[in-house]
Length: 161
Image (cartoon, rainbow, N blue to C red; front, side, top):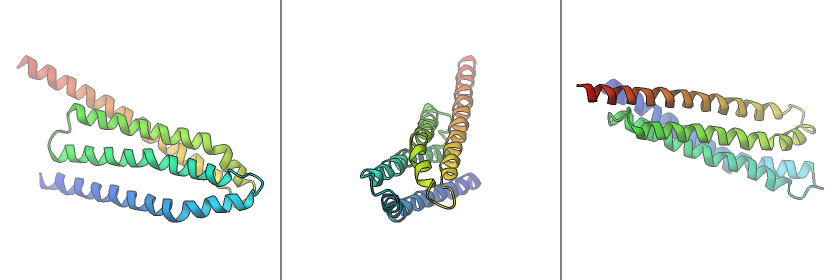
């Protein structure tokens, strides 16, 4: 019991640190990146705002997914991991990961446009984020399905006893 709680506490701390890291990027790096893009293409008035929309737009489902992951760890601590709440949390994480991928897929032309004028191509960073988000979505979908099957088996066993 104590080992489980310490491992979930460690994972909760990792989730918290990931949230702080992305918040720091959103506060400090995204405005500089948007200003940089706007300076590279001064004839495109909306360039700065397009960068804000893509990057901040992806941060919203990221934070929703972090909250759902935190809830999932809380369910584990409360010994309610095999519940419909856990299935719902995994489903929400899957949708958030897909949303992040979609936002970055839609933003790839923008990144490609910016990458034309930047020496190390940043377009690969967008592809990495898309791929990682899709891997997370598939993993969450598999876990969701397995957990749902385990809940179904448990309820069948409860009925037969």
